[in-house]
Structure formats: structure tokens, C-alpha cells
Length: 117
Figure 1 (cartoon, rainbow, N blue to C red):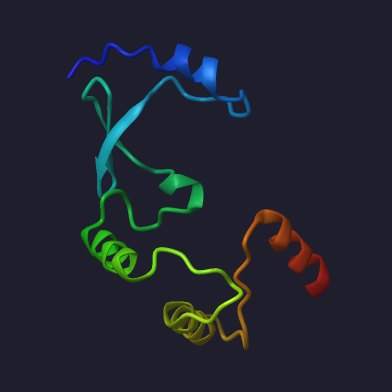
Figure 2: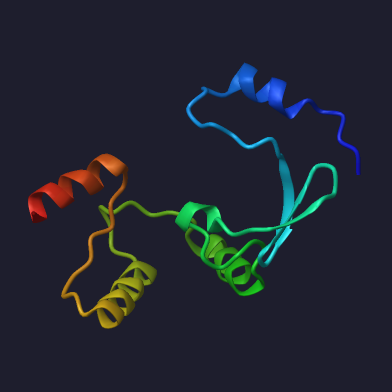
């Protein structure tokens, strides 16, 4: 699967240079495996730097997200939502914390951390 797109050149042209990228362009994945645009297989040991703990193309996660996207793909924190309440209950039960805070941005997260400290 030879890809003729010069991903490095286009990246430099259209994306701000804020990361020191590795010379690989991933195209797909399944579980803990990733494949680049040339078809080379890799084992993903980065887990999306902490945001994708379920691996890539996880069937259970995909089914849950697809189901939820047909009901509500997003709702503001200005309103109540049952999935958010259920997640908060589960997080409290698993962590022993009394409450959770769902932020809308990194700035909100930092503000909350400063106030909590």
C-alpha cells in the first residue's frame, strides 16, 4: 500500500510546528497494533499518550460511541445528561471521591485544580 502523499511536507505546510514528530504516518489500527501508510505494522505502546486506553478500533468502545452518537453526540454542561451522571457515579465508586468535575477545556481544568488546591 504505497501512499504517494508527502505527509511530512503537507504537515509542515498546514500544521503548526508544535511537536517533534517521528517519521511515521499511521493510517489504521486494531487493538494494540497500528499500520503506517506503507503497510508496516507497529505495536502501539503510547496509548494515544494516555487518552486511548482501549487501543485502536476497539469494538466495544466503537459500539458504545456509535450508539450514543445516535442519541446525543454532545450536550453542554449547562444541561443535565444521564450518561454524564452515570459516568460520575462510576468514577466516584471506583476512586472513592465524592464528586467529579467535567471541564470544557484545559483552562477550566487548570482553574479547578488551582481552586481545589
